[in-house]
Length: 569
Image 1 (cartoon, one colour):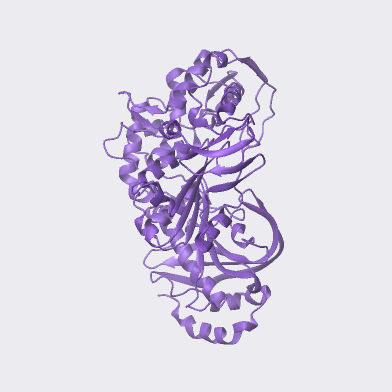
Image 2 (cartoon, rainbow, N blue to C red; image 1 turned 135 degrees about the horizontal axis):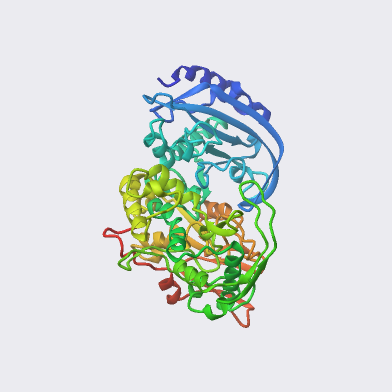
């Protein structure tokens, strides 16, 4: 049963607290928080009142590439709830509350990354930090998904004791936990700050990588939940995305090529140098990776000299010796094949790869000090996905060595994964008309040198949603490719690449003021980030910047996945 017995107590506190509750310390008590719990927000859950905990935090400094650095005070409110009829179920949620005098009638949910459903204290400050001025703040929220604690990842909770799939945890990971976090968070926000039912509370979401996928899961399933969503480098199309992390490893085994990280770094740096000028300006940033493959001089890559000093071992990695040599023909062949994407034995395209200029994360090798050779280092993301979630199909038992695993095996794993988890984890439902009808907006951004989630993945989803034409899509959904940027982070190899630090602020202006962003604000010498399908171009000897339409760019990001019999959105 829900804790409906709290209602009379809440009503009394509501009447007595009222406008007198004007400071952060006034609302940051367990007693007050209990009177404002959203006990009736979701019929199928029960809030555990004994789990309520508040903590007043002062002079907290938050620093991230996702928002401006700021120092502020907040109240950390946490509580737990359970789902009716599910034994042992418990979900923890956390909300950061600004002072009542600075509250601006907004609520913001945040997501996670990798196998984590939240990003701890690194993402949630985006809500507290001022949107237009530092004097106004929002409530921020995050969830543990019911996995046991805020630090427990989905991969740790995904299997039951008997080794079978924990479907409750999987559904929570897929979309339900973020939905509940937002429903509870919006009602909690209204209760705490005494916002009249007639007054709107704007609700937003921001996340990158898995957090980006979580944002899209809400857009597609709960179109009226958020007024605006920032979804960056989303890890959707899980069946293909996670399995594809093993593609480079299978190519290494197929070609017998295990280059050192130093050799791969040389290829990457030469690629950056070769492709840098394609946007009309040589600035150390690959802004037109779509034109890159047609301009690389492979003859100069093969045989190029490289040298790296020895490196001491650190946590999780062994010491490596000094390395020097020249880029081999085998390495050159491996990189060409890698960038060409995964093809099956019939030559049909299964999935696409990363853009030239990205780091070769999925091709990294490890050093064996006994044999003094560089050997296979299987991708953890792909390996965990197959070992834990697809562990009873053909060849999955060989995931530690990839023995017997072929390109066709990877395709079979993708097909199996999509059949089993498609309705939960693919998150690529292309019909966004309900979201559009709700008047909501979504800003979708992706680093062009992403090494973990192919940039073309985001373009493909935009294409799938491209039904009534670009103008109709532009009305509520805009995609931006960020030149030179890696996976949800700046790029050490392209340090002058722009980063849109105030994307949430841009979204809020679009939602609340009708200021649709033609571009995102860049940084440094790159003033703007173009929205797709427009591409960056410098003219007048690199002095004039513009966003242009280029059919070659569109074609370079468009793939026909002929290996699948059914459409892959």
